[in-house]
Length: 81
Image 1 (cartoon, rainbow, N blue to C red):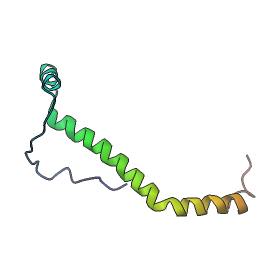
Image 2 (image 1 turned 180 degrees about the vertical axis):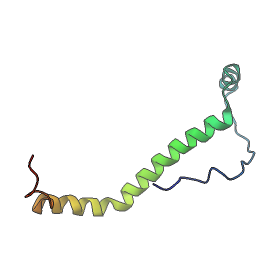
Image 3 (image 1 turned 45 degrees about the vertical axis):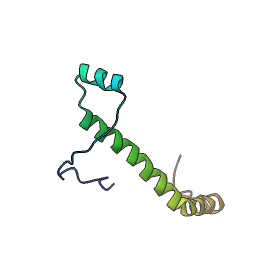
Image 4 (image 1 turned 120 degrees about the vertical axis):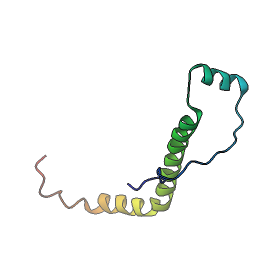
């Protein structure tokens, strides 16, 4: 699988708005907001990439599954289980 993004690139400062109580609790627990946001974005983006891949390849998957149902797979006659 290819990398989702280049982790070696420099970081860029940005502003975000967060619920004040949530921010205070994160500070109390010494949660690094930048790394937490990066990890969360990675997870969300990976899910989006998976969804896009499936949408882009759904016809091929359906065709393959139909062919397997009709003709089986190459190893049907040679496997012993």
